[in-house]
Image 1 (cartoon, rainbow, N blue to C red):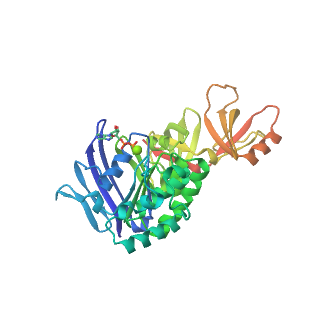
Image 2: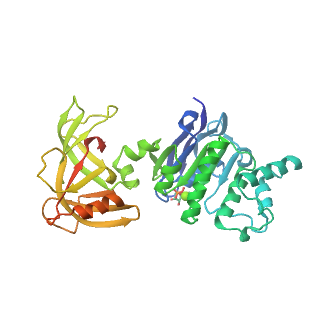
Image 3: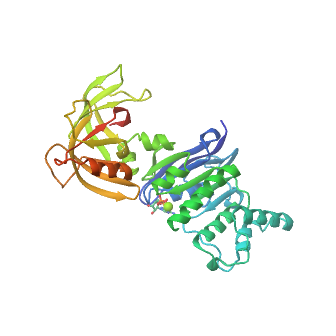
Length: 375
Ligand code: ADP
Ligand code: MG
């Protein structure tokens, strides 16, 4: 396996010790997203890879080159690490034109080669016609493309981006995200990308490292991280709302099913072949994605497993989707809810037509769509 980059970093920070190990192998894709709450150590990690900050101990390699090794007292300078680093709240040089900004890192290149590189980047980032403008004469999206061009100019071997789209409008953001996804593929460059936007993380990432308090809670493919978080903490950081704590009542080894008693209901959940099958009495948390819950009007009393009845006690419209708050049981209480359910606008409209006078609904939880987190 060819390593695109590998970093082991230990560094004492004010509030905690940063202690992480990260990397990307060529067969794992190109983009690693660092995701996590503010102040969890993402920026410091990127600075250590770039060579702007120095770990107390650790190791950083980019491709085959080791650029930091505390044992060997090796610390290659930023200018020689071949990294394209775009800091958070980057600033273009206000007194330099677009061309001068992009060419900033090319001062040691010979003139002809620097000019060819400049033209290439202007084309790549679609900045034709803007070459002589100053940053204040550009839109936010254009400024961002110049910043990308500047980071890419010296032909880095890795691109390190610290929340590059955070300050931009939604539509420009979407466009630039798309550009970036294509760009990293075209250039064949590994990218480490920081964001605290879930949707952005999912769109761009081949792999996601979930940060919390200086540690990586989980680092895996985006689907593993989103659909199979290994801890309740990760699930919460990923915004998963339906987390039910319980204990295993009964385990069916042959079918890899467990019956879990929770404060809300008894629920059957399937356990993946790769996953530990918890025995009776074991503490677990059930994680259920709101879009995986089926809901339909109360008809005949259903007795199949994981089918429950209850009330919709609230809703939030989200354009193409609706979030419904659902209470299990017959009694109506507005105060709290057991579940969040997500339906499409179409399904929501259909529900409006089917609504019965009793206003009782049935839901079902597919055992295969329930993810089990062992305590
Ligand atoms: P994030 O990017 O995840 O929001 P940061 O990496 O910026 O988090 O910061 C992590 C923690 O490190 C914060 O508590 C911050 O105050 C602290 N910190 C930032 N820079 C330094 C430094 N140079 N020395 C010590 N602590 C720092
Ligand atoms: Mg940061």
